[in-house]
Length: 471
Image (cartoon, helix red, strand yellow):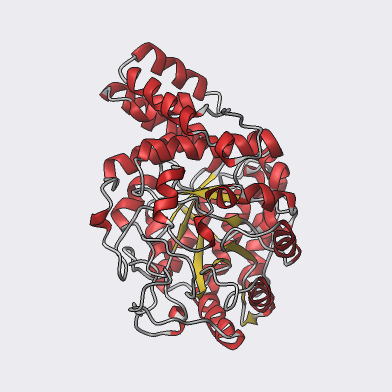
């Protein structure tokens, strides 16, 4: 029985409810009156149910699809403006005991060299990332209680936060590790993590178990209920995601929104972020073996429909996607992207991009400076801001500010000041020139005089060597 308030995975992610929702969406995919009514409701920016959003995703009317994309673009603009937050993944270890058939880290893969960073190697990786200009990391590690116990993850977090190199500092560490216990989530919270991220991979239980034939990840319920344990452990911000291509995309979309609804119903706050990775090539993995692969047009519509359904939630796209693909979805809903990423353990220390321990092939291989310049040339503000997390604006406090529009009064100025830091400390001359012009232009868009004047003051102080101003 479907129950969004249940703490049992098979009740808040009900296969029967998903299939009924998809059947209803299929029957109404050309129902213009219903689709217009759903879009009208969505304009209030209070979100849509999984059933309503599934109708939009299924819609095959060209005129209505144009309205869907236009609304997604407007909602993105209203809540996130022209800011794009930048981050980088940091792979700590590729030791893993799971048998996930779509991931090269699976325990049976004998082709890939196994590696785990020492604390000195973590330090060198972090310095390399700081020297690029990064302030926000997402740490990744395979599931292996012997090689990657929670104490190792906690030690790495302490090391990361402790490193101050030149003007560099990692100000927010997000964590993407396997489902764990309430006790361990509390330890992660106490270590000062930002968002806890865990991809569901697929919401289809039968398919999930087939794709994870061995290892602790085989337990569908334990994995799916992880976010409830994380929030019980005191972590305010959690990030959802599925790996599109493992199952029919409409099924995953519906399950993803049901998971968001469940978190809202039980904890009073939905996911802080939603990631939208697609299956891609990697060692020992051929994406052609997955028949549910998602093409670029469907991918763009998925992003648009997620943005409409959960307007307040940040959306992330990684360097799995090409420059062209990322450019297409930025205005439709994406608010965070990775830049200059290495998906191998120890990859940032290497002058040549290594492939021997990569979890997946990186499509967008540009440097962070190139990505920053590219964003600015499209009139986006590259943001390295971590202010909300450090000011305690997390969970329901962040969402309440976001829903009433007040977050703009913090995020826009903070984006400009962190961009200024990047330009002064790390940017190439060409990137800095474009960035200074963008900052001059955007400071004029700060509506409150007091904030405007203070930003100008802080920008001047950053030029003189001061760092880390925030609202």
